[in-house]
Length: 625
Image 1: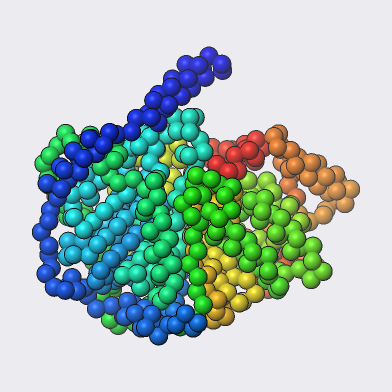
Image 2: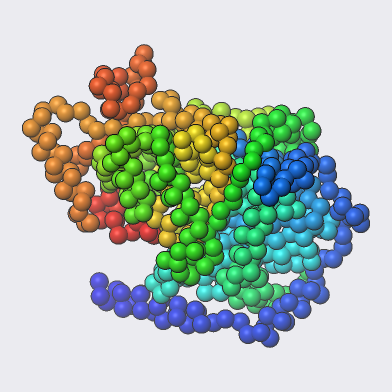
């Protein structure tokens, strides 16, 4: 082992140290900037004062809200974007309606149909005269130097920056990925997880969705149950201020400052041009574009369901969080969320893809559960069968007893073929092109990168564990909270150690009963028996043996390593036909619920084995996973 580390780890550390110091000279940057300036397509497609913006009832409603607002009495128009087709159509409609500015911030930007569609819409907006700025986390966005070269010269009105690039490069091959982990772990591990689209500083969309097919039900194999919220009104100014802080931060790096892309631009002065998108499912894209400009469709799906509310806040961790994770001011959003939960009186409804609690969150839920009249805590999260982050799930599995007994959680784990998710998939693909796409369009480089992926769900080849059942699969990616039916939060925060201490996060908090009630219903739908399994204590069959088993399981779960006891305190249950849903504390629970195993529907596979191994040995990796 020592020889292996010397032969492999040492050269990686040395090369990583050299790469870390290899920044470009000012002369190299100026030369690349000059090439970009000389070869950028400057032709405008519009010469009107409004930049040929299309009419939009969404932007119009936002402008009305701004006009009616005062400092003492803000007015907001709020639309919960749970269904995936309206969420994508709203983005396209707002981009086409922009008159002045568009700012986009995201963690993942892929080159599939959704990624191409939104990127092409932004380029076209820039070419009609709108100022467009894109800020994407480097590690999982625009994994193509060809594409970045095209973006750098697509329009003088389009600017792209990559956040926290590894070794000052746009592309991170597997060896650089490994070297980044070895030499510069803290910086490499800290990512910008914010998601925001802001138009004319008047209306914005924030939440959990990245720009990739699976976030909008366009992936043929595995899709996410996700959620955004669209806000028009004064809170958009908070969004603009947050984006400006990130855009101006030293880790937001312009394209010509990236070593590999700079070299490419200097070596090839030819104008790359902006290519016509090549969609795998063109009819589905055409259907979406038609909806995005259809007044009747927009009214039915986006205008009519909107709410007019008063107080709305957009919160974001400061970019300084990535420099000083313990800096209190930088944890603005994280601290605010925890304070809101701590003030709960009757109920906390929490939806998160990763049920791995940070120390701060554990303390808050422990205090809540110790009250004389503790609030009810309902949790909607992933099962091993529905998640693509199986190593993260192992941490949740390890601490089930703590969650149930110490925090009083009522845990519902999403089934991989949840009917509620399937309904949204059908709506997003209604009458779309039924030509079956190629089974795997991922490049070898992308597949290799996915195998190294530890920091979140990004690539299409990063699929969940194999199942015993067949059919289209879904996983939960939405991050939301409802407290006491008084307010609701939709954002990017996973309520886990990564979100608390490493990633920067953002979200919208709406202080309105009607909104909270709508969000509550959406989350509870995912906890219904047909959509989720219930996690509850095992039934005591032989009292003495059960007590011994639970004691051994408790000791094992508290071990940082060698947590090998196979019989856990809790397991998954499914509702029996003819029984009404009930809480695990109900005396009739075991009469109406059937135990279906710790990992229902999951087939024996390397991923199942790794889940067990991470449970046993991976407790120290919580902050990474």
